[in-house]
Image (tube, rainbow, N blue to C red; front, side, top):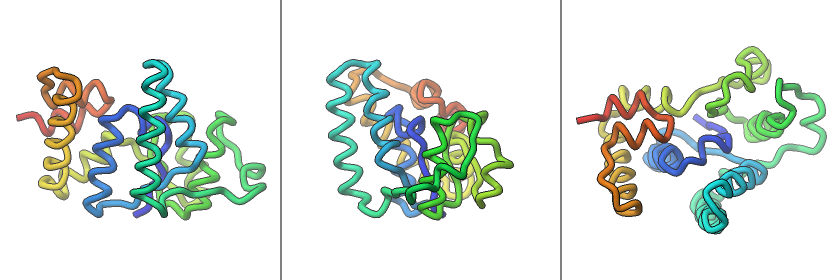
Length: 180
């Protein structure tokens, strides 16, 4: 399954690391566009300028580690598309160009299911998707979550609990499921 990742699921870090960890395990094939990666880098500015530098380094690693994940919409494709927010049309165009099966986003209102269905796409949210994957392959998701939790503890110096960390990352359902 090919899933186009919107910028809002690449940032925050916990969400991105969970999704890419599951993708590394072969559960799905991630996709993104240069514009989505740029949106992610700019979104980190609210943390501070050093966060943008770090994000650009992460983006370089992403591109190197997933060389076939970046898709480029054909010129003119966006002109025939419509979404409630014009700023999201590039996401739909890139997902179409990459022959994605779904768009993963937390912005449900900006990606109406009926419009996506016309293009052969579905919309999925990261929390629900990870929960579904956990139900089917609990060992995969648990292993990825343990690594993400350990990294968060190391980087922050805080004794995070999985439920609170995942809730902060807008992943409350999978965080609750993984609480032990």
